[in-house]
Amino acid sequence: MVRQTTVVGETDRGVRIITIRRPEKRNALDAATCDGLLAEFEGAADDGDIRVLFLQSEGPSFCAGLDLKEAGASQTTPAHERLFSAFAWLSKPLITAVQGHAVGGGLGLAVLGDVIFAADDAQFGLPEVTRRLWPYLVFPAVSRRIGEAHALELALGGALIGAQEAERRRLVSHVVPAGALRALALAAAHGMARHDAEVLQRGLEHVRAHTRAEWTGAVARAASARAEHLGKML
Image (cartoon, rainbow, N blue to C red; front, side):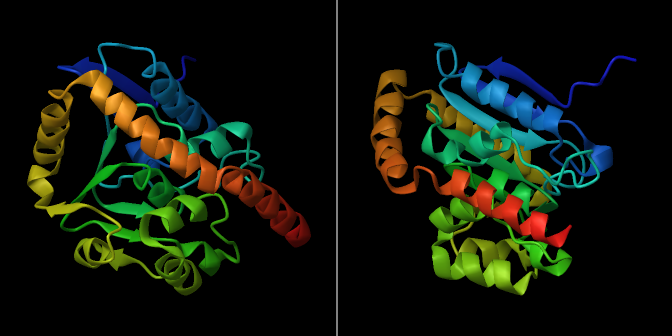
């Protein structure tokens, strides 16, 4: 049996459009999907035709987080760590378009975006605590985006928040009508791609360098803490 590709990409006028295609699983992140996303992100680095990355997903939910039903899902891999620390190494600007739910690892994926568009009916959260877990892997990315206090409120409470509240907390950049999400977010990506490629890359690298200095090792330490936590629960 040929395994269906869960991540597909195409380049259009300087924008690499990356789509997660697991709608039947609410786009949960299994190993193949993590590997596919990393391949797209890393492959864009040396591709001169790509100036901007655009991340979207099929179906009613952006991403339901890690695929907890996948064999071995209790153990994270270097791919998980590299994916959720992409905010520190991506060499091209990333725009994310979020519909439906972006929870747990899905929220961690969404906030990798430098600019985040959210449908007006989208919901966000870190509900791991309701499963006696903690969002170790994604907490650094969320905390970097909205600050530790707001990230802790999400993680300790476990409740979801709507798009308008997410915008108020600066978790997302823009809230738009659900029916116009892709068109508006992609238009922003194409607008960004019209700028000088070298300026975009040099400017972003300057920002990423400061990010790396502050966050180097944060996700690796989180992965270690997660493994210890899960080990004690078994």
